[in-house]
Image 1: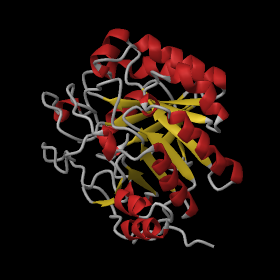
Image 2: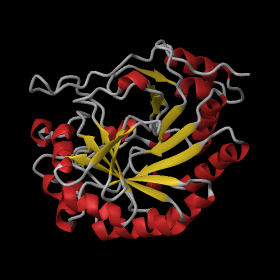
Image 3: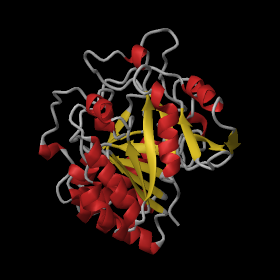
Image 4: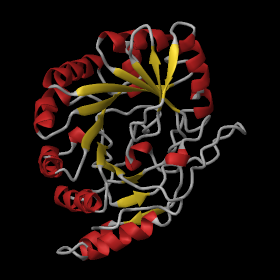
Length: 335
């Protein structure tokens, strides 16, 4: 039996998030600059290399695989990769294959994603106001995403909405978004804005809305019951008794979620980040490409990287400056 991946703090690493592209058809203001310079194609892992990489991680004990970007569904021929990963679901080696998307391409791909074995998708969506949606995404169009949500639910995919809490932008939509998700039987998770990459004119201290404030405001309208469940990610959950829906809170800044971290992130270039909030990474592209026929070097490189996984991240807004800011954009690491 293959020895599982255990980090220095005795946490089993069984969740891999994989960015398959740094490109996106949106330019969300907290994620990308408007005039992004994207990576040359030769630096990206091919779909075949992504298959080898993910399959190696699965052989080493990864049970949950989340595909991210950029926007994963804008990558050419990406369905061949999803179809290929389906074999690990069929064999029982993989428990879950999921996707984080902006929803723009779901109308095209929802049925095929379900056929590949996917059962859940997370849709990043910070407002249900059409004008504000265009403002926050720069290039996005809300009706297109709404059509994607319709298609996903019709295909049988469970939809969860991920909303970044942005002070002065979507504060007034807390209750409308909650009600909208309840009406459509969708779970909702709020995320504190994270200091990832240079955004030019965007000031994150002005954007930052601590979720303890959001939660207190929610409690003025609903009865909140703490839930003990863990989805394998960093969210903490409550149930709204009046609607029965589940609301998640991801709070890297006001409540460090590192103690139970079971995940690592692979970029589209084959860099493995053992922590979202640290710059340390391991290059897995070289051992993958240098040993095209076998996986021994790659497995050794993965184990060496997991041995360096830190206890926690460095995000901090408490001193009124963006301490621990990561120089890379979220779209490069994988959202």
